[in-house]
Image 1 (spheres, helix red, strand yellow):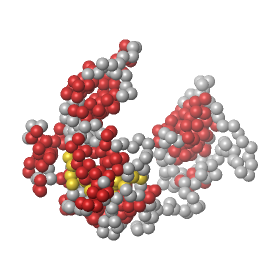
Image 2: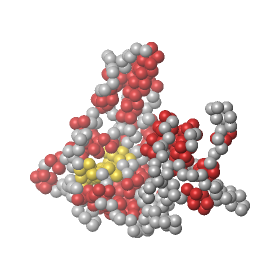
Image 3: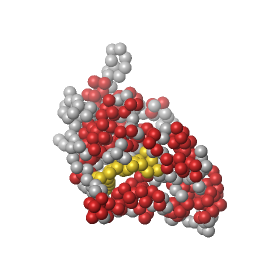
Image 4: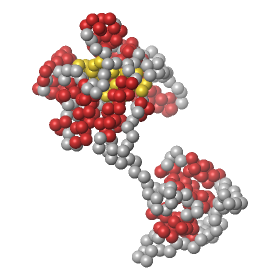
Length: 447
């Protein structure tokens, strides 16, 4: 407390005004109230207690790091400049009001909030508009929330800056061939499409270990088609009010139909389309039902709407989503092969200072690494070179030794996924869905 700290002259510090004391008690009761704490800091600074003002401003910034008022007050407190007094006019108030008597305590002890509100009512703006009895309006009432429109979901145009094509995906030739047959060839050849009765709709489920580029491939398909792109995750759909989640799901597909040709990418499908038999919440089951209805296109035509979904755990996805006409094709996205690893490493090293990097040796020792693992290798190698430069005072380049050391220290993040997927592929391969995974496990001698 200020009255317990000696002043610079060596005598006891000046006693606090009753108003500052009252504000201290109020701040102690609600330490997270940033406006109240900033007002206390303003009064401390005006009273000449710069150090105490700095301390209060620092606490306010810890609660609200981007608060412009807190930053400005901290700057003034550090320089010791108190706000200049302003003349009292009908539209302005004195910066430092006269001291008022401290609010009385409640009969049973404790802080008297009503008295404190009267004490600072003309200085601190009201927390809620509409007078002292006004209440905060609810965010929404059941069924009253406005349905989303096209602006509620980010629709990325095909000519957007940074759009990618399949040529930007290194390696993965088998994945590209499957995508060509499912989506790209019918789009590029309308006469053949009509001849063979291939509709401009469809669904494809991408699955595999995390960090292997499923989202990147979906964006590349949209770029290859020259189509708009909508990425949907569970937080875009799920809502606390009954019926709103289903309405959000419907609006996603309505937006895609209006923006056709459009690729709808359902990220983490195991969350959006979890098995209903294991879902206890009725609202989540209804959301899965709505997704099934939208995929069927019962109430609207889905031509020109291409649905791509991605998951790390396809065995957790509701089986109804994978029946013919919905997400009826599955595509295993494996860790990048040799050419893909070389392309990924080049990409992550392109703006870093490197010297004589043996890329072939690095590709060999990173077999089984995901794209995210390879990015981590480059980051760790850069950290090692940076630390050496700091210690020696001489900037040095990133070399093969740094990259190999980082690769040996990192365990591939795909190993736990293959350990879990192996059991599913061997003992729960209904309909041959995981035949491609079994073939890979045998080839890689992981069985």
